[in-house]
Each structure stands twice: as C-alpha cells, then as structure tokens.
Image (cartoon, rainbow, N blue to C red; front, top):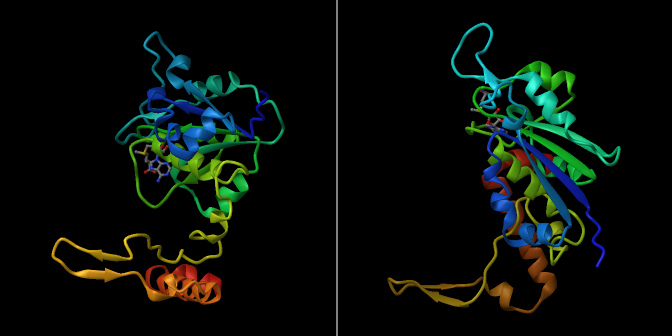
Length: 238
Ligand code: SAM
C-alpha cells in the first residue's frame, strides 16, 4: 500500500527518549502508525563538542544555568535535508510568540516542520537569529525543557491535517474555532445519581430531538461560558 505522508516532523532534542511520548497514543498515535506524519528525532548530544557529547556552556555576562551552543545547533541542523521548500523551523521558548489555534492552523499547512527543544537556560540567541528559527511559546509559564512543548505543538497541528480525525466536523465546533469556548457536553446516564443519592439531570433541550433548539441552546451556552471564563476572547468575537 502507498502512504502519503502529509507532514514530516523533525525534533532536535537533548532527550530523544522522551519521544514519541504522548504522540504515540490515541488519534495522533494512529496517525503516526498510518504514516499521516513522520517523526524524526535528532539527539543534540550526537553533535556535542567533546567525547561526552557536551552541548552547553556558561552564559557570557554571568548568571545561573547553562546555554546550548550555536555551533552544536548548526551541526545538528545541517544533518537534516528538507525534501520541500514548504518547511518551518521553530524554537520553543517561553519568550516566543504565544501559540494559538489560529497559529496551529497556519503551521499545519507546512509539509515539514523542524522543532528545536531548549533545555537549561535556553539557546544562544545567535543560533536562533542566524539559523532563522521562529520563536514560539506554548503559554505564559516556564517548563524545564521544550520536549513537552514540542508534543503540544505537534499534536495540535497533526489533528488538523485532513484524514487524521475520524469526525472532522468536530474541528468546526470546538473551542477557539470562532473565538468562543465550546458548549458543555452530556452523555448517559440521563439521570445520574451520585454516591450521596442526589439526582442530576441532563438539560431537557438535549433530549428533545429538536435540533434547531439544541443549536440555539449550545450557542447560548458557548457565549455564556466564554463571557464568564474568557472575556478576552469574547471581546474578539463581538
Ligand atoms: N531561561 C528561559 C526563560 O526564562 O525564558 C527558560 C528556559 S526553560 C527552563 C528551558 C527550555 O524549556 C526553554 O529553552 C524552552 O525550550 C522550554 N520551555 C519552557 N517553557 C516553555 C514554554 N512556555 N513554551 C515553550 N517552550 C518552553
């Protein structure tokens, strides 16, 4: 059988054993198995400056922690051959542009994506600028390394590739697709009796069979939830 790989992902990391990690499970794991995308993991230590594979050094100007050297990044990058012109190079860093659903939509259109995972205090700024990495943050908080952030970014992109999700229409209604959070979901049992014996019903409208009313109710709930939890998003919507 001929498989058409929709996206090639290359990860540069000091911890190759952290992959595929969460990318090996569920919908994304199936996409990997079915070759909807490929994952190549490059160990930065293979391009280290000495026999121990050292990749970092002390920061000029002093201060705590270590910084990944630019020559190591360059050598690792030069070991990769892009097969198309439609590729991007991303450095994950808390000081990058914040990731959003809109950004994921744009990134998912690339044929090839190379992601550099930082560690320690980060990466020498010259490597980021001269080797032309775009800097992306997955949120306003600091993790110890870029590996989990890379898995967040790749999972977010891959599920947008046509044919990856079983029910692609779910992409149209989920949170952020229109600057609104998604409406709440309910399933069986219709009456849930909790361990204290209290009964909790599913909202009547959802069992009415009236799809116009259900759509209206869901839209109202979406707006209500967005206003309450994410007023910043709601302002964008109106
Ligand atoms: N000194 C850096 C700073 O204050 O911005 C933090 C470095 S952090 C301890 C080590 C690495 O984790 C970073 O180089 C980056 O690759 C990754 N990382 C941590 N938080 C991240 C975030 N919010 N988004 C993307 N990558 C992150």
